[in-house]
Amino acid sequence: MKKIFGFLIVVLCLSACDVSEEDETVIISAAASLTDALQEATELFIQEHADVEINFNFGGSGGLREQIKQGAPADIVIFASQKDFDLLNESVEYVEAGKLLENELVLVTPKDNDTVTSIDTLVNANKIAVGTAESVPAGKYAEQSFSNLDLTGKIEDKFIYAEDVRAVLQYVVQDEVDAGVVYKTDALTEGRVEIVDTFNRDLHDAIVYPIGTLTNSDIVKEYYEFLMSQEAKDIFKKYGFKVE
Image (cartoon, rainbow, N blue to C red; front, side, top):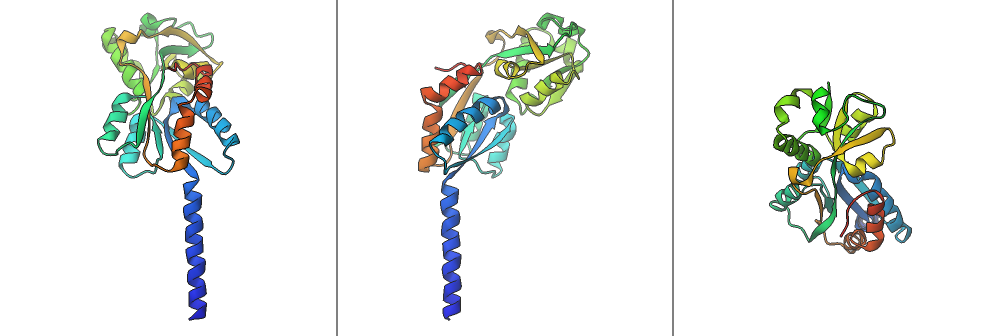
């Protein structure tokens, strides 16, 4: 009996240790366009919270939404689409929620590519990289813009679809397409592409980044408040995001 009792104590201790470690881990599901800025901001947070582990899951907002609805763990979500954020809220209740950032939609081309020089000249392209509209907000904004410009029927057969906006950027970087539609902040992270045009905001839904917490631990609340702070917003501004 003593041996069994000792074993139970060990098991209980290990379970308690696991819970403690989990309490100091924060899982973030975030739009791929936030990759660089969010990682840099988090490095600043970690300087004051060395015992906290921040794990990221970057991707298209629609895909992330479906993952969470199907049970994928997440403590905080930051989407590039108010629609996806609201749709998730239909099945998962936010503890706290707010608006974090705004962005712009731009047309980029490989450096020294003269085939496409503006949105109007997209008809000259052989291939155009865009996000899949069903799961990538940037793809949806592009779809809305092209429709409002009466360009869809003229260029849709040229589309190369990507799983998130960073994948679109890579198509352009690798010179596999003549142009791609990405956020301004993505274009600014890559010196091998050129911004040749900006889509008027009236052509698509507002590009906002809502943020919400799905759990209510102290460290999740503290990280959320940090991202909403001026200190973090200064980093986002450096990457080209618009902040309030």
